[in-house]
Length: 261
Image: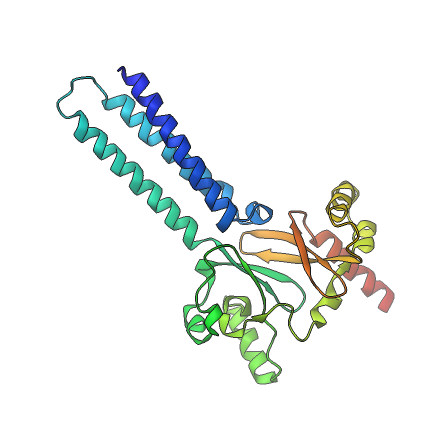
């Protein structure tokens, strides 16, 4: 067997393994609707580059029929490739989306490595460990006590948001759905969205025929912004969109300020 054929076989095996791994990661850890926002493409590209380039390239360099140390060399290459793959999977696991958290006027996507361990220890049993198979939708209402609210604000300024503290999580939708009043109705979105986005917004809303009144709220994270599409009446989340909600939200805030003068 020539070294080129050996490298091609190694590449084919690596491609099959990578396809299975990426399929699982996208299916369970990084849902397609949140894939771009979580910037999973960069991580998976690095993982794929290592898997599809490192192993086959080293095989191409060291393979030689009849070489006494060939088995040892190929074993070392396989171990290096497995180690690189394991490191990439560990990184994907630690930075996976864990919770979509409803807070005062928006949602926040929280990644597993952003959760406060001290708060997790005090949380209800279902929130003590980040979910293993895709993000869970929860709410994190602010405390009613003014003193506790001030403490939460100060913690937020220091970089620890309430959305990162599972001890404050409750089931979604929460008993107090006042945050839904901040949702932007679909017709307002189409009215205030930049002209270049209106067609895309129409397509987003068209995916939910017969649902009733639709609305959006921003979805923020440390890696970017997106939009949550929900049913305005009860807050039921229908899906997510990569479209930036802030041009619409900012235009609506500016309109309210003008009318209040």
